[in-house]
Length: 287
Image (cartoon, rainbow, N blue to C red):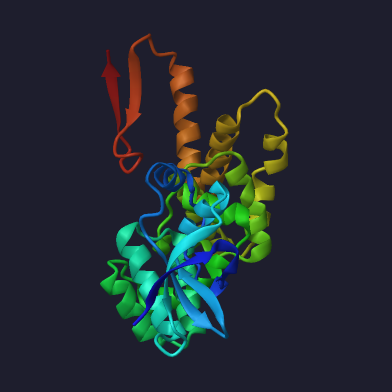
């Protein structure tokens, strides 16, 4: 049976293979601990005479930041719990109590694999935690954990799902470096998906790279425009990429705009294409 003990915080070893807290604030925890103390112990297992933390990384960080010298710990002896069983306990505690963001899910798959869990076992664990993953995604998801912190933070802040990883991982590392410009411009989740989906489709159609496409839209020229906000620059980039992705539609829209200008319609009158140019017909809207 594990022991409930008090340990010096500095004696508790943080082993990275168990960590499942990324890009999370400790503020709420610190407020709670400051008012009522540590209500939930840290979970540790004895490894070579040391207390190895396997669940409670965020709680330990909050205790550290508050200056606590000791912590309440449930400690399993070395022969009482294996590393894999300890990680399974940490996985379910975190997944079922607060959920796991996409980076934490990627790390969970990576850790399960390092601890020799099979892909079928990982799939079953995620299913029980209400985080269903296909085998194909289990094979790819750890690559998300290898992204730089700019990407990781953005994916968490915009609440990207694990399934979105498949789209992002279609790009090479140098392409992702170039696509960081969308993060810098403050692209929303929907804007980012729209952009990368169009770029991926153009790549496969034209046999080119993301960098080639960004050159075709004169990205550097748009970014250098000092009179436009980041949101306006992003909108301009989206419009330019749309023209490349849908050249015929762009041609029809341009032609339609020219016709409307030449007709010099009175105020309140609007000429609208039927079914977005699917038919050679227009509707006249009067207000």
